[in-house]
Length: 393
Ligand code: ZN
Image 1 (cartoon, rainbow, N blue to C red):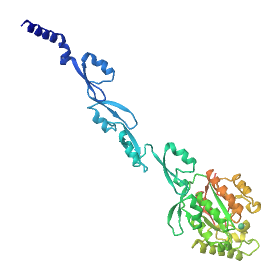
Image 2 (image 1 turned 60 degrees about the horizontal axis):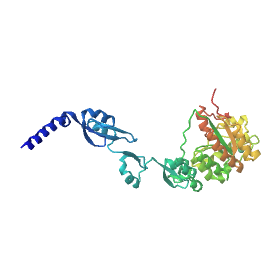
Image 3 (image 1 turned 90 degrees about the vertical axis):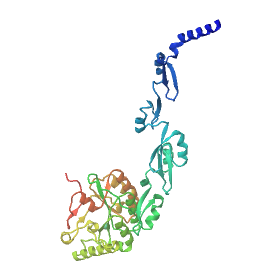
């Protein structure tokens, strides 16, 4: 029996000795952000908290920009509604500009079906091809001749039937020869410099190049056409008119008006207007440029149109030198100028292809005479000569 007393005594002893350890008062539950749970003595809890344990159940939440935060389970709902997630997430991007947030573990599946881990960039080639790249690939593609802005490599053109079509730059000349024009999407800023290029004596076989260059640079000019040349190239005059160019009158056969009678001069003017109206389908010129710039008082009193002279003479007819023509414009051009050229010389077409983009790059708006007068608040009066349309001081 003695043996049993000893055992019982030991149990009592144990109970007394270890009582504080098993007491629920001295044990606390602690929680880790990864879901683990542990019991520690309340006196030791503080040191566990310093190691990243928490006194109540917590979880880690994740933001789309890669941040993490530990919140209590009670707070979780609020965080979910504020755009935090229970698992690591990433933003993925679609070609049409949509974004979506997905769990990291699902990304691969989305990439396979055409989503991107970076915003995709659509690039265009001059022959109409398109491709999708991401930011890190962009520069390599651009250096190979791909374009990010579709308008840098294509334009909306209008067919002879009036149908609008996006045409890539490799095909501009084909389309021009089929009679397409570039859709005019100009917006004129009245506060910015503007000038009027004018081309006399045409149309000719060189006019088409000038017309194409102006259209591709979102610009217009005024063509003072000679009636008998309009008879030879009516389709050029028609194209110029359709493309938003202004067609002015430069007589029927370019005589010296000081050497003919007023009646003959008036007949020259009305014959030219008639040829232009036939070619354009009904447009009668409203501006006159006199052959050689010659005027006499008698004619100006009966001429029913303003007399458009010029302020910058390129002397292209004299130099017949592309570089001289370019220099005469670029060295002297000022806001409000009317620039005189002739669309009957190859050198003038050559120079135009340099001058027009250069002027546009310098911030000049290339407009028609009527537009220039309108934006400079000038009401054109018949019989009056105009040299330029400068801003009034
Ligand atoms: Zn002339």
